Image (cartoon, rainbow, N blue to C red; front, side):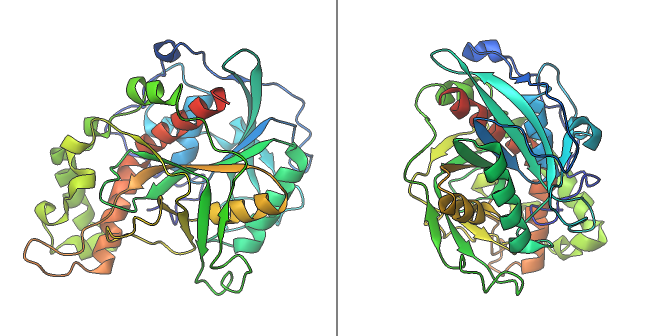
Length: 374
């Protein structure tokens, strides 16, 4: 399981080494978001109005979004944090009846209100997208979904948040990158002839405020991945993976071969937020893992350049907040032999599958902080 194929309500890319903590909002002198009640008109009804749209994608990301914005008052195991589809509202207006075969398009939503710095409040439409650049109906479907959302909600900005691959070895598991641009690099036949391909889309009219509340949230509320990604846990996960048919490519390698700085326990106790304004995310439609030599990108993900393209066309300010759910993977073992691509992908998936929900918790908190600090 990875960022590429974790798209189903019934796919739990979540394990149980520790609970997601209750959020003590008083530590940063704030209060929890509040659900906004409205009359739901059904899946084909237009969406409610909101000040901002916050989109996410995978089940791990959705679990963290729900936990932070809706059910923050108590600790939850990662699997119980995954929302039931009946607890969110389905939106499928003018959508195909199905996409990947796992979910109905377009997705699920809730409406929350958050208090703002200086008084007042903002209404946020939280949206779990079932349209995805790498899955049917591919770029055309994602583009149509975005046009519908942006046209109906009448928001003043749109955020895309969620998991991402690390672009450099300085990005640790659980870190968060905030960016305002993304480069589109598409190779699938369903997408590659798009006019978006090869282009970079940047928002020059807006960038999230990172100077006031966010540093305190990082210090007081972020989840320290060192609590769960211990050496003992890494060894257990590697041993377990070697017993799975899909991960037999890992059999030749020891834990020592696969460990590197971005996932070492001693480096995971102080997760950080990176201001990557002006540095694009790399958006691909295949599962791309960096070799540690891509500092020209803020992180690696699989949707955001399309958000940037459509939002730019519709004159909608946008931002991206991406948590590092799978770090740069080593390319050679301790003997200097090249590690196979299958093994690198398997090890990346081990990271995401077991720790993606914890890194997503940090990304959701960072998003909330910048929305409060409008």
